[in-house]
Length: 421
Ligand SMILES: Cc1cc2nc3c(=O)[nH]c(=O)nc-3n(C[C@H](O)[C@H](O)[C@H](O)COP(=O)(O)OP(=O)(O)OC[C@H]3O[C@@H](n4cnc5c(N)ncnc54)[C@H](O)[C@@H]3O)c2cc1C
Image (cartoon, rainbow, N blue to C red; front, top):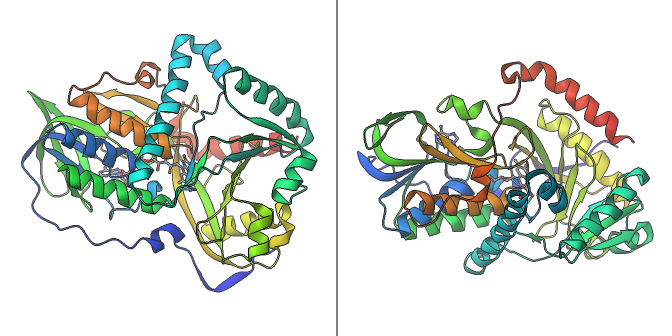
């Protein structure tokens, strides 16, 4: 069904529009710092705050205006999960697998502690993981069992229970995860920026890092506003990694994810759908939720190669009203896109490239994890804590990355075919 567009429809991000930012002062950059952080998203700002709190002179640089990146454009779902379940990870990695899950939990707790200080409309609303075809129900039943054995308080729901909760007949079953929350991504980002500044970090936007050179006692960091010497460097650029650190760029595939936001819904529509976060079982998955101001945001993609925002909007609207026919005729007011960082094993990665620490590879679920990893890396470089367990994972390069634009469409079509089963 073609999207109904609001007279005020625009291709900008709802969250960013709701949190206008004051431009940061363009003071001269310091010539030398203890810690230089590349990227001012959740990861970089958290790293900046924890390094500065430890007393290190800290500079956080972002090439775009503050609040431009994925950290202000995402779905706002705070999810303590990885793509693989705890038993699968323990089977593959032994104790390391268990440690990774413990860190995912620590990241969630860290975020819930932060949102007590940062006003960002956080609610622990739970999440439904919804079987988009009956063939996925046995997997969901097994997965629910695996999670329950690992101590998680999840519930398996059949189709009738799903319908009762969200008023949709589009799903055969679901798992309900009570320990998931939703926040306003741009408000959370803005709060992290203020926290980093309050801790004493210097933050500059519109200043790109263009190269890193290792030298005695640290690094010479090339920026678009001149060189800065830094004893330690943290790279928090996630999917946005570019030519500045080519060794890291080889290991990440930036993939677009698209979101539409509707006009505010009626009280009956809000009541029927409920406050929980929602995601389905497809490879090319949909994720959706209600916003704090009563809209539906509905995100996803139908292929791996990029499309323009209007094309994605049509695809998303059609699926939103298929899942929630009660929203037929509701107008779309916003549509936007952002990059997620995919890795070969679909796990986040932490490590060093030529002595500089990095955290990347959110694979679409980095709100709590990248925030926590940034905080942790700030503590690692200031000698307060050892590296996280994620640093023990091997981080493989993406095969034939320079040719990815020619093979991604085929991989996407394969995923879409699998999703029909
Ligand atoms: C549409 C969308 C929906 C998502 N939904 C969810 C969700 O619901 N839940 C969830 O957990 N995760 C979600 N994610 C993922 C989540 O947004 C990310 O994991 C998280 O924001 C990553 O934070 P970050 O700080 O690591 O990276 P970013 O927020 O991407 O920040 C990186 C920053 O680095 C800067 N940068 C890059 N190169 C340079 C350079 N050379 N010099 C200076 N600066 C540079 C960029 O400008 C950018 O601001 C979603 C992502 C997208 C795009």
